[in-house]
Image 1 (spheres, rainbow, N blue to C red):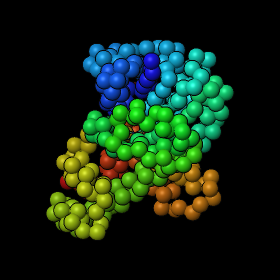
Image 2: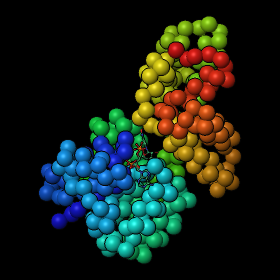
Image 3: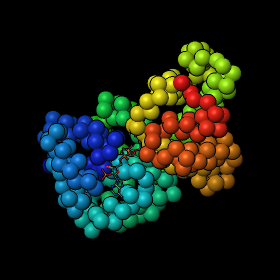
Image 4: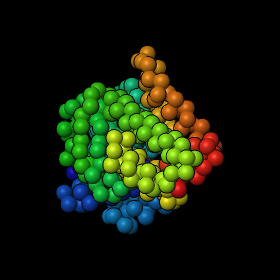
Length: 294
Ligand code: NDP
Protein backbone atom coordinates (compact mmCIF):
# COMPACT_ATOMS: atom_id res chain seq x y z
CA UNK A 1 0.00 0.00 0.00
CA UNK A 2 1.29 3.48 -0.85
CA UNK A 3 2.24 5.58 2.15
CA UNK A 4 2.42 9.36 1.90
CA UNK A 5 4.25 11.41 4.54
CA UNK A 6 4.03 15.20 4.98
CA UNK A 7 6.70 16.99 7.03
CA UNK A 8 6.21 20.57 8.23
CA UNK A 9 2.73 21.62 9.29
CA UNK A 10 3.15 25.40 9.12
CA UNK A 11 0.88 28.00 7.53
CA UNK A 12 1.21 26.20 4.18
CA UNK A 13 1.97 22.63 5.20
CA UNK A 14 -0.96 22.17 7.57
CA UNK A 15 -3.70 22.77 4.95
CA UNK A 16 -1.67 21.02 2.22
CA UNK A 17 -1.36 17.92 4.41
CA UNK A 18 -5.10 18.10 5.12
CA UNK A 19 -5.80 17.74 1.37
CA UNK A 20 -3.33 14.86 1.24
CA UNK A 21 -5.06 13.09 4.16
CA UNK A 22 -8.48 13.46 2.52
CA UNK A 23 -7.07 12.14 -0.78
CA UNK A 24 -5.36 9.21 0.99
CA UNK A 25 -8.56 8.24 2.81
CA UNK A 26 -10.53 8.32 -0.46
CA UNK A 27 -7.98 6.08 -2.21
CA UNK A 28 -7.17 3.63 0.58
CA UNK A 29 -3.67 5.07 1.12
CA UNK A 30 -1.92 5.95 4.39
CA UNK A 31 -1.20 9.60 5.26
CA UNK A 32 1.52 10.26 7.83
CA UNK A 33 2.42 13.66 9.26
CA UNK A 34 5.44 14.94 11.18
CA UNK A 35 6.07 18.36 12.68
CA UNK A 36 8.95 19.64 14.81
CA UNK A 37 6.41 20.76 17.41
CA UNK A 38 4.65 17.42 17.82
CA UNK A 39 1.42 18.86 19.27
CA UNK A 40 0.61 20.31 15.81
CA UNK A 41 0.99 16.86 14.24
CA UNK A 42 -1.25 15.36 16.91
CA UNK A 43 -3.87 18.06 16.28
CA UNK A 44 -3.62 17.40 12.53
CA UNK A 45 -4.19 13.69 13.08
CA UNK A 46 -7.26 14.38 15.20
CA UNK A 47 -8.69 16.89 12.72
CA UNK A 48 -7.91 15.13 9.43
CA UNK A 49 -7.41 11.43 10.12
CA UNK A 50 -3.68 11.47 9.31
CA UNK A 51 -1.24 9.60 11.60
CA UNK A 52 1.38 11.56 13.58
CA UNK A 53 4.73 9.76 13.41
CA UNK A 54 8.43 10.12 14.20
CA UNK A 55 10.91 11.17 11.53
CA UNK A 56 12.19 7.59 11.43
CA UNK A 57 8.69 6.26 10.66
CA UNK A 58 8.09 9.00 8.07
CA UNK A 59 11.32 7.94 6.34
CA UNK A 60 9.71 4.63 5.36
CA UNK A 61 7.05 6.34 3.20
CA UNK A 62 6.80 5.91 -0.58
CA UNK A 63 6.32 9.64 -1.13
CA UNK A 64 7.77 12.20 1.29
CA UNK A 65 6.59 15.81 1.12
CA UNK A 66 8.47 18.60 2.91
CA UNK A 67 7.32 22.19 3.42
CA UNK A 68 9.89 23.84 5.71
CA UNK A 69 11.18 27.43 5.85
CA UNK A 70 14.41 26.97 3.87
CA UNK A 71 16.64 24.31 2.30
CA UNK A 72 18.73 24.29 5.50
CA UNK A 73 15.88 22.76 7.53
CA UNK A 74 15.22 20.25 4.73
CA UNK A 75 18.87 19.13 4.92
CA UNK A 76 18.50 18.78 8.71
CA UNK A 77 15.53 16.41 8.47
CA UNK A 78 17.22 14.59 5.59
CA UNK A 79 20.19 13.89 7.85
CA UNK A 80 17.90 12.40 10.50
CA UNK A 81 15.97 10.30 7.98
CA UNK A 82 18.79 9.20 5.68
CA UNK A 83 19.49 5.76 7.18
CA UNK A 84 15.80 4.82 7.20
CA UNK A 85 14.72 5.87 3.68
CA UNK A 86 12.96 3.38 1.41
CA UNK A 87 14.54 2.62 -1.98
CA UNK A 88 12.30 3.69 -4.84
CA UNK A 89 10.68 6.50 -2.86
CA UNK A 90 10.20 10.03 -4.21
CA UNK A 91 10.94 13.10 -2.05
CA UNK A 92 8.79 16.08 -3.10
CA UNK A 93 10.24 19.24 -1.55
CA UNK A 94 7.54 21.94 -1.50
CA UNK A 95 9.80 24.33 0.42
CA UNK A 96 10.71 27.54 -1.43
CA UNK A 97 14.26 26.24 -1.42
CA UNK A 98 17.62 27.25 -2.84
CA UNK A 99 18.71 25.90 -6.26
CA UNK A 100 22.27 25.64 -4.92
CA UNK A 101 21.11 23.23 -2.19
CA UNK A 102 19.47 20.85 -4.65
CA UNK A 103 22.56 19.04 -6.07
CA UNK A 104 23.94 17.94 -2.68
CA UNK A 105 20.50 16.85 -1.45
CA UNK A 106 19.88 15.00 -4.71
CA UNK A 107 23.21 13.19 -4.45
CA UNK A 108 22.52 12.07 -0.87
CA UNK A 109 19.06 10.81 -1.82
CA UNK A 110 20.24 9.10 -5.00
CA UNK A 111 22.70 7.12 -2.88
CA UNK A 112 19.65 5.77 -0.99
CA UNK A 113 17.66 5.04 -4.16
CA UNK A 114 15.35 8.01 -3.59
CA UNK A 115 14.46 10.59 -6.28
CA UNK A 116 14.26 14.27 -5.36
CA UNK A 117 11.79 16.68 -6.95
CA UNK A 118 11.91 20.35 -6.05
CA UNK A 119 8.26 21.36 -6.06
CA UNK A 120 7.69 24.76 -4.46
CA UNK A 121 4.20 26.18 -4.54
CA UNK A 122 2.44 29.49 -5.08
CA UNK A 123 -1.04 30.63 -4.17
CA UNK A 124 -0.57 31.53 -0.53
CA UNK A 125 -2.39 30.16 2.48
CA UNK A 126 -5.74 30.75 0.72
CA UNK A 127 -4.61 28.54 -2.17
CA UNK A 128 -3.34 25.90 0.25
CA UNK A 129 -6.70 25.84 2.04
CA UNK A 130 -8.62 25.67 -1.25
CA UNK A 131 -6.29 23.01 -2.71
CA UNK A 132 -5.60 25.19 -5.75
CA UNK A 133 -1.84 25.77 -5.43
CA UNK A 134 0.40 26.08 -8.47
CA UNK A 135 3.30 23.63 -8.19
CA UNK A 136 6.50 24.30 -10.16
CA UNK A 137 8.48 21.10 -10.43
CA UNK A 138 12.16 20.54 -11.15
CA UNK A 139 13.64 17.05 -11.59
CA UNK A 140 13.03 13.88 -13.62
CA UNK A 141 9.73 13.95 -15.56
CA UNK A 142 9.09 10.24 -14.82
CA UNK A 143 9.23 10.87 -11.08
CA UNK A 144 6.77 13.74 -11.47
CA UNK A 145 4.38 11.48 -13.42
CA UNK A 146 4.64 8.86 -10.66
CA UNK A 147 3.61 11.32 -7.93
CA UNK A 148 1.32 13.62 -9.95
CA UNK A 149 -1.90 11.86 -8.78
CA UNK A 150 -0.81 12.45 -5.15
CA UNK A 151 -0.47 16.24 -5.51
CA UNK A 152 -3.87 16.66 -3.87
CA UNK A 153 -3.19 20.29 -2.88
CA UNK A 154 -2.54 21.42 -6.47
CA UNK A 155 -4.68 23.30 -8.97
CA UNK A 156 -1.90 23.51 -11.57
CA UNK A 157 1.32 21.51 -11.91
CA UNK A 158 4.07 22.63 -14.30
CA UNK A 159 7.30 20.74 -14.99
CA UNK A 160 9.77 23.63 -15.35
CA UNK A 161 13.02 21.71 -15.93
CA UNK A 162 15.75 19.74 -14.25
CA UNK A 163 16.54 19.60 -10.54
CA UNK A 164 16.66 23.10 -9.01
CA UNK A 165 14.54 24.72 -11.76
CA UNK A 166 11.43 24.73 -9.55
CA UNK A 167 13.32 26.57 -6.80
CA UNK A 168 14.68 29.05 -9.36
CA UNK A 169 11.24 29.85 -10.80
CA UNK A 170 9.78 30.27 -7.32
CA UNK A 171 12.56 32.64 -6.25
CA UNK A 172 12.13 34.81 -9.34
CA UNK A 173 8.33 34.82 -8.96
CA UNK A 174 8.61 36.01 -5.38
CA UNK A 175 11.29 38.56 -6.25
CA UNK A 176 8.73 39.96 -8.72
CA UNK A 177 6.16 40.05 -5.92
CA UNK A 178 8.74 41.99 -3.89
CA UNK A 179 9.38 44.42 -6.75
CA UNK A 180 5.70 45.23 -7.31
CA UNK A 181 4.88 45.37 -3.59
CA UNK A 182 7.78 47.70 -2.87
CA UNK A 183 7.31 49.91 -5.94
CA UNK A 184 3.58 50.31 -5.31
CA UNK A 185 4.35 51.21 -1.69
CA UNK A 186 6.79 53.90 -2.86
CA UNK A 187 4.23 55.30 -5.30
CA UNK A 188 1.53 55.45 -2.64
CA UNK A 189 3.91 57.14 -0.17
CA UNK A 190 4.54 59.89 -2.73
CA UNK A 191 0.80 60.26 -3.27
CA UNK A 192 0.15 60.34 0.49
CA UNK A 193 2.68 63.15 0.88
CA UNK A 194 0.86 64.94 -1.96
CA UNK A 195 -2.38 64.78 0.02
CA UNK A 196 -4.09 62.32 -2.35
CA UNK A 197 -6.65 59.88 -0.90
CA UNK A 198 -4.95 56.47 -1.15
CA UNK A 199 -8.17 54.47 -1.47
CA UNK A 200 -9.11 56.53 -4.53
CA UNK A 201 -5.57 56.28 -5.92
CA UNK A 202 -5.54 52.50 -5.55
CA UNK A 203 -8.96 52.32 -7.19
CA UNK A 204 -7.50 54.09 -10.23
CA UNK A 205 -4.27 52.06 -10.29
CA UNK A 206 -6.25 48.82 -10.14
CA UNK A 207 -8.20 49.90 -13.23
CA UNK A 208 -5.03 51.09 -14.98
CA UNK A 209 -1.68 49.87 -16.24
CA UNK A 210 0.11 50.21 -12.89
CA UNK A 211 -1.89 47.39 -11.33
CA UNK A 212 -0.38 44.15 -10.03
CA UNK A 213 -1.27 41.34 -7.64
CA UNK A 214 0.21 43.54 -4.89
CA UNK A 215 -2.05 46.48 -5.75
CA UNK A 216 -5.14 44.37 -6.39
CA UNK A 217 -4.99 41.74 -3.67
CA UNK A 218 -2.57 42.90 -0.97
CA UNK A 219 -2.18 46.62 -0.36
CA UNK A 220 -5.84 47.62 -0.14
CA UNK A 221 -6.73 44.61 2.00
CA UNK A 222 -3.68 44.46 4.27
CA UNK A 223 -1.87 47.81 4.34
CA UNK A 224 -4.54 50.50 3.97
CA UNK A 225 -6.69 48.61 6.53
CA UNK A 226 -3.62 48.50 8.86
CA UNK A 227 -4.43 44.82 9.50
CA UNK A 228 -1.25 43.19 8.10
CA UNK A 229 -2.57 39.63 8.75
CA UNK A 230 0.48 37.37 9.07
CA UNK A 231 0.02 34.66 6.43
CA UNK A 232 3.41 34.90 4.68
CA UNK A 233 6.33 36.09 6.76
CA UNK A 234 8.44 39.05 5.66
CA UNK A 235 11.54 37.00 6.51
CA UNK A 236 10.46 34.33 4.01
CA UNK A 237 9.89 36.88 1.21
CA UNK A 238 13.30 38.44 1.94
CA UNK A 239 14.79 34.95 1.78
CA UNK A 240 13.18 34.30 -1.63
CA UNK A 241 14.36 37.62 -3.10
CA UNK A 242 17.83 36.82 -1.72
CA UNK A 243 17.77 33.47 -3.55
CA UNK A 244 16.93 35.29 -6.81
CA UNK A 245 19.89 37.61 -6.17
CA UNK A 246 22.17 34.61 -5.46
CA UNK A 247 20.99 32.99 -8.67
CA UNK A 248 21.78 36.16 -10.62
CA UNK A 249 25.35 36.00 -9.32
CA UNK A 250 25.67 32.30 -10.06
CA UNK A 251 24.73 32.73 -13.72
CA UNK A 252 26.71 36.00 -13.99
CA UNK A 253 23.50 37.77 -14.90
CA UNK A 254 22.62 41.44 -14.62
CA UNK A 255 19.45 42.06 -12.60
CA UNK A 256 20.00 45.21 -10.53
CA UNK A 257 16.31 45.73 -9.80
CA UNK A 258 16.03 42.24 -8.29
CA UNK A 259 19.24 42.76 -6.29
CA UNK A 260 18.04 46.09 -4.94
CA UNK A 261 14.66 44.64 -4.01
CA UNK A 262 16.39 41.82 -2.13
CA UNK A 263 18.44 44.40 -0.20
CA UNK A 264 15.39 46.56 0.58
CA UNK A 265 13.40 43.55 1.80
CA UNK A 266 16.33 42.46 3.97
CA UNK A 267 16.39 45.96 5.50
CA UNK A 268 12.62 45.86 6.06
CA UNK A 269 12.96 42.43 7.69
CA UNK A 270 15.50 43.90 10.14
CA UNK A 271 13.59 47.10 10.89
CA UNK A 272 10.00 45.80 10.85
CA UNK A 273 10.52 42.18 11.98
CA UNK A 274 10.92 38.84 10.21
CA UNK A 275 7.69 37.36 11.57
CA UNK A 276 5.50 40.27 10.41
CA UNK A 277 3.41 39.74 7.28
CA UNK A 278 5.36 40.46 4.08
CA UNK A 279 3.13 43.46 3.34
CA UNK A 280 4.49 45.10 6.52
CA UNK A 281 7.66 45.77 4.49
CA UNK A 282 5.82 48.95 3.51
CA UNK A 283 6.19 50.20 7.09
CA UNK A 284 9.83 50.90 6.24
CA UNK A 285 8.70 53.02 3.27
CA UNK A 286 6.37 54.80 5.69
CA UNK A 287 9.33 55.60 7.95
CA UNK A 288 11.39 56.76 4.98
CA UNK A 289 8.61 59.15 3.97
CA UNK A 290 7.13 60.01 7.37
CA UNK A 291 3.61 59.03 6.25
CA UNK A 292 1.14 56.28 7.04
CA UNK A 293 -0.37 54.36 4.10
CA UNK A 294 -4.03 54.31 5.09
P1 NDP B 1 5.71 28.58 8.70
O1 NDP B 1 6.69 29.42 9.41
O2 NDP B 1 4.26 28.83 8.91
O3 NDP B 1 5.98 27.04 9.04
C1 NDP B 1 7.27 26.53 9.07
C2 NDP B 1 7.24 25.05 9.33
O4 NDP B 1 8.59 24.58 9.36
C3 NDP B 1 6.63 24.66 10.69
O5 NDP B 1 6.02 23.41 10.56
C4 NDP B 1 7.86 24.59 11.58
O6 NDP B 1 7.70 23.73 12.70
C5 NDP B 1 8.85 23.97 10.64
N1 NDP B 1 10.24 24.20 11.04
C6 NDP B 1 10.84 25.38 11.27
N2 NDP B 1 12.14 25.19 11.60
C7 NDP B 1 12.35 23.85 11.57
C8 NDP B 1 13.47 23.03 11.84
N3 NDP B 1 14.66 23.54 12.16
N4 NDP B 1 13.32 21.69 11.73
C9 NDP B 1 12.13 21.15 11.39
N5 NDP B 1 11.02 21.88 11.14
C10 NDP B 1 11.13 23.22 11.23
O7 NDP B 1 6.10 28.69 7.14
P2 NDP B 1 5.15 28.61 5.86
O8 NDP B 1 4.28 27.42 5.96
O9 NDP B 1 4.56 29.97 5.62
O10 NDP B 1 6.26 28.41 4.72
C11 NDP B 1 6.84 27.14 4.45
C12 NDP B 1 7.54 27.23 3.09
O11 NDP B 1 6.57 27.57 2.09
C13 NDP B 1 8.60 28.35 3.03
O12 NDP B 1 9.67 27.93 2.24
C14 NDP B 1 7.84 29.52 2.39
O13 NDP B 1 8.73 30.42 1.74
C15 NDP B 1 6.94 28.78 1.42
N6 NDP B 1 5.70 29.45 1.02
C16 NDP B 1 4.92 30.14 1.92
C17 NDP B 1 3.75 30.76 1.49
C18 NDP B 1 2.84 31.49 2.44
O14 NDP B 1 1.92 32.20 1.96
N7 NDP B 1 2.99 31.38 3.76
C19 NDP B 1 3.32 30.71 0.08
C20 NDP B 1 4.17 29.89 -0.76
C21 NDP B 1 5.33 29.33 -0.31
P3 NDP B 1 7.13 24.25 14.13
O15 NDP B 1 5.65 24.14 14.04
O16 NDP B 1 7.76 23.35 15.09
O17 NDP B 1 7.60 25.70 14.27
